[in-house]
Image (cartoon, rainbow, N blue to C red):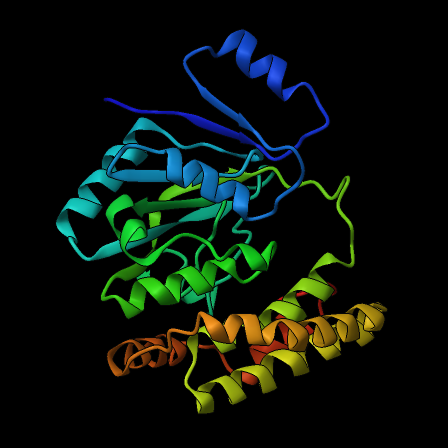
Length: 281
């Protein structure tokens, strides 16, 4: 099966360059001069030549030839499929992890369904769809770039899917990660996501729910300062987001609301989010 492998080294401080160039000469290797966040993903997406592009984070393993064949068939059968998210599990027990979709995983994780989330480190794209709607918005840097791209796909008539047939493993490590990042970026980028995509009424409700959640998490976990920094920088950056505003049309909003109808109830949210340390919108 013809394939192309591209490695984007987002300014690592290890021996990635020597390893790739020394042992994998057929791999396209691109290194950035500094950490450029989500823009690094765009470098790979721009360089890719195939009609189907799969993006994997460096700590995600388990993609097989059978998975690739399945994805090719899936995209062939669904000509308006823009992106397909994978099922992600943790390595020790094979349990579901990195669940970002707004539905109960106990009910939905073992089947296909439409979503407006994109698991950036474990997803397949139709290259033609990306060429039509554009890549990740670079200003986000971290957080919310996935749904922003998903909304643009949906607005242009594409589907964004979760498939349980492709299962990969995320070897997550907290080493080297700054713990305040999500409390800041998840707050700031909500303003920009709403400004770029949502009708006014939906944007207001989205921000009311999302910022209330982030405020609660930040107080609970001791990161209130970063929440307020996120609010301030979010407001400062909103004019730039509005300049590229492409509000969801009626058909796209109907699709979004159908997806929203699968959101779990209040008791589930209290149990899985409020009483569990960490950020989850």
